[in-house]
Image (tube, rainbow, N blue to C red; front, top):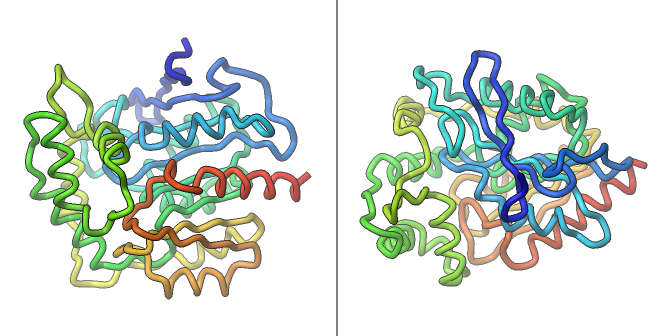
Length: 303
């Protein structure tokens, strides 16, 4: 049933968890196969985030008058409407990439364009090794082959010490206190939308919409050591167009890394979003039009 522009899709992971995705556009009605070059778009959120992050962008892409698309937005295990895993160590990008493949197989999707925010972009890198034929175009939102440990330390700090808001007004205040310096470009409406994507509403009480055990994966990291880079996986994307979106105030993706991505990739484009940090809200400013234009051009050149 289509409601608010999308339908809910549930499927089973290889290890038996009930997982969820939102379907927009033609696929919301389990519609027909896309035309050549007009691939479905798969949206993959950040570490503790969920399919709601992409709602506004998905509506715009699905209802594009010139080029409407099928949009698939995943909740990873332990997030949103997907089941929690009794073993928190299964909250890793390899398992989550396998879950995405299982979901796409269940939907009959053989290839797609991918949009990955933060952890979602890491999952795309893993997918290049696991199922390269799936990937026809990529949008990386504030993520690349090199992750700055200072950015991860910041994420670990605010997740590990996040207060529990009493209502959504307080939730907005908390998020502004944590992220406001990096996101001066956001309007009040942006902050409220941001908060309602992070928290689920339980009778007016905002509740972080992920398994608390997920934080064990962050706390287990040794942030005194550099993280392994993903340049081989990134270079495996050389045959597909890549658009990287970087928040000008990002602590996770450096400008130097974006420059190196540009040097190594023959079909690369980059956009810097002023007044936003990690990670830019993809429904703001000109980003929806930029993403739609990138996908349209990628599809045209593929036909």
